[in-house]
Image 1 (cartoon, each protein chain N blue to C red):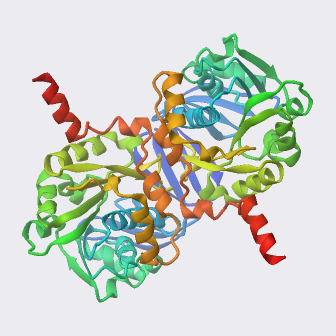
Image 2 (cartoon, chains in turn orange, blue):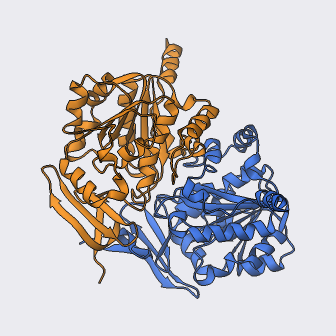
Length: 296
Length: 296
C-alpha cells in the first residue's frame, strides 16, 4: 500500500507525494521538520507539513530568485540571504565567482543541519564556502542591527504564518532598505497568485511606500502547486528597464555551470504577467502621481 | 468528513479536489464522464479520472490556445477545432468577430451534452452560435476526408491514451496540414514537460517532418499540475517572428471582452523557454541543414 504525504496548504485542494522512505522527522524549536524520499521528486523537505523544496524541482525557485536579480544588477559583490535554511539559494548565489561575500541569516539551525546531512544535492558545499558567513539567528533583528551593507537582499521565507510572519512587515522591509547599498535590489517570494493574491498585493503596497520601483516576476515551481509563483522585487532603479544586451553580456561573462531554468530569454519573459496577476498589483507610483496631478 | 477526488495521472504524485457535490457521473461510449462542484476551483470536468477543465482556471488553457495563434496569424477567418468537447476553446474563438466559421469535431457527443448542461460558465452560448458547425465524429477522419480548408487548426485533445492516441500520429498531422490554407497555423496541447517530456519531443519531431517551422510556447494551468503546460505550434511561417507592434495593433482592433490571462506581453513572454524545456526540443530544421553542410 502506498503511503502518502498530503499537503493541505489550501482548503479544498491538496497535493500528495508518495513517501518511499522517511529520512528524518523531528521538531525543532520553531517547527516540525521532515525529509522523505518521494516517489516522483526525489528527496522532499517539509516544514510544518508544507513542501519547502524537492530535489526534482528546486532549481526553478533557487535559480530564478538569484540569477535574475544578480544579472539585472550587473555588479553584485555582497549578498544577504534572510532564511534559506536548505542552502539552495546560497548554493546558486555562490556560482557567481564575482560575488565576494554572502551572509545567510536563518533562524532555525536545525533546518541547516538537516540540509547538510540529507539534502547535499540542494545545498552542495555552499555552507563551507569561504565566502559564506552563516548566522543562526533572527533575520529581522539582523537587518535592524547590522552595520554591513549589501548589493542584493534575498528573502527566502515560507508563507506568512508562524515564525516567518515578521518577514512580511513594513518594519522588516524598512530595515532591509537600511542595509542596501545604492542601486541594491531586494527580492522575495510572495506565494502563488492564483491562490494567495492578497499576499502579492500587500507586499507591493509596502514596497511602494519604501522604494521608487517595485514589481513582480513569475516562475513555475511544480511542487508549489496551483500555478505561477510570484517573486517580488524592489529597488531605487527600475530593474525591468535594463538593456537586454547587457543581461546577455553579463550572462556570458558569468560563465555559470549548467542551469536548468534561468537564461536571458526567460529573464525578460518572466516579467510578462497574465492579466489575473497584473490586476493584483497596485498602480505604480508614477501613475498615482499623474492621477493626483490631474485631479488638482 | 471531506470526500476527495484523487487524480493519479502520474505515479507517485497526485492532486486532490474536495468534492462538494457530484453533478453528473456516467459512462459514454468512449469514457467515464464526471462533473462535480469542487472546494476550490468551481465545477470540474473529469474524463476517465483525469481533470480536463475547471471553472476556476479554464481561462488559461482556452485563452492561450486561441488568442495567441489568432493574433499571430492576423487574418483568421475559419477555424477547425479537433476535440474540445467542453466548448471552452469554441467560446474563446468566437470572441473574435472577424472569424466567420468554426468547425468543431468532437468524437464524444456525451461530453458536449454534459458541458451544455453543467458547464455554461465554460462553453457560454458557443454551441448555438450561427458561425459554429458542430460535428459529432472522429477528428482524424474529418481531416482525412473533408473538402474544407482552414486558417487555424486547434487540437484540443487529452493525453495520448485511449481514444485520443490517433491524434498524436504522423498520419493525423499530415492530414491536418492537408486542410490548412497557406500560412495557416496548427496548435495543440502537448502535456506538462516536467513530467511528460518525451511527448513534447515526439510532437516536434513529427512537426519538423511536415512543416517548415514549429515549436512550443508555455502557459500555466493550476490544475494541470506539475508546472508549465506545453502548447505546440506548426506553420509554414515562423510565428515567433511577427513584429510585436502588429500583435499589439491586432489585439486593440479585436476589441475582445475582458480576458484573464492573454495579453500581447504574455504573447511574447510565452515563447521564452526554461532550459529544461528548451532541451526537450529537437534542433530546428535550419540548424540541422547547416550542420549537414558543414560535415560535407
